[in-house]
Length: 449
Image (cartoon, rainbow, N blue to C red):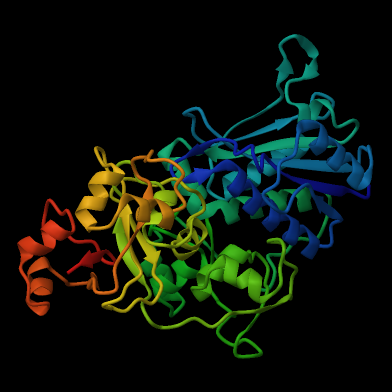
């Protein structure tokens, strides 16, 4: 039978799916789906995908999308990728009432070989009509062979760590299972892999292959030294000898995210340099890697209670996208105490700074702020295009400064004492002018002197 495969990236757009432990379902399913799409193309299996970007698809649109790819035929396999929630642990595979469990069992075996526990392979019936499937992706897709793959539980700390570190291995396991089911010759591509065995550590593997732990972690997007038995690790990296100085050739398993991380460039900058409108890549595609400055142009910020990426970006005159790219974040979820790199524009100390930023605290009013900074309420409203005096806690506003107001940008290692001494003033005077209640400083903060 000439099989055709449709990869469905679950959720998307306004439908984020489940969230937890730094994972947003719609983002991870897209990464998994794009990876699988590229690998199946490489293996020569006819394949299509429901979405390659963060777009919203209604159930009806998703089904229409699936059936429009290769028609309503029994040789069409649909793999709908999802991440589970609800406190369990391990993967699940659900298949349609009209199909047998052969495909699901093959994929289950390969997921287990990749180090992920499989809780169950099963069917689920609609309670109101047990002759029908519970999930629309099974119920409404005609004669096709649809399966839902739940790769793990993002609200389970063990599974979430596995998903973050091993999602490519799990996606590859499904690819291998599909190749087996469709009788397609399977290979891992051009890269060398090592399969983790009992007793292995990153150090022992690095020693065997004459490489470093950091290099293996970088190649495999690992955030910790934890390994799972059966996990596949890339060992040889072929990016060190590109055919041109700033050209990279896309290899099996690559994603825009992993390439941006390898070269320490922003995802948006990588897309812009290559005129890309989506995250889709093709094997052997040439990518221009934008040059980056070696200059440290970021500050370290420790996340506090009540923080979110939006108010942090506003406070430091940057964007949520830039912060996420610099920190390789895949979601907007933050943890108290987490340390973020916050990009900074090049700013020099000056005696004619146009404005300083101020974040609204409980009890603030435009009047009290104007009094503290010696400017009028009218000027603050005009400078920030404010129509009313209403302020929100956490809101960041710009305070216009007169030409003779001296300001200082806090740098790493600064203290109030060292700043006061350098500017021939006192600690108390700086604290009074800046409404400071402690001697704690934040790198990148603008102080009135």
